[in-house]
Length: 175
Image (cartoon, rainbow, N blue to C red):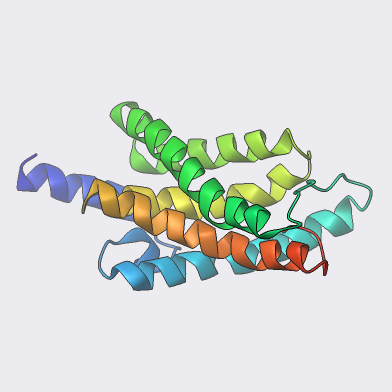
């Protein structure tokens, strides 16, 4: 891809997602992108979760068996890595046919629908973190495939860490 095409692609990418922090949409500092990506996903998902719970108090919650350290590992390591690999595959295909922002939106909606199969209201909460994770993937894909997988998987692992520990220690339900 020549420099003009890259500049055009970058311009098309940054305009529609400019409301997100630069660390989420630009591949500059790997660890900063992970931490800011996690905060950008986690904090709004807490608010969205509270709103969904308030609006739909009788809605089913996801049943996540986190009663031992294997459950914590599955939720904090296995699920984020596996879901990121699936997300990366889907985004790679989508990016061949649609602009990056459209691919990110489709990905987020798809993950919301997929998580709704476990608990319908859960998908209303999950779409936002996956919007952020998908954005991280697309941004870091310009740098390398390894970084494009590492950054969103790490942010996703952090997203799942507190809920996994709360479930493990019996203090609450998943977010």
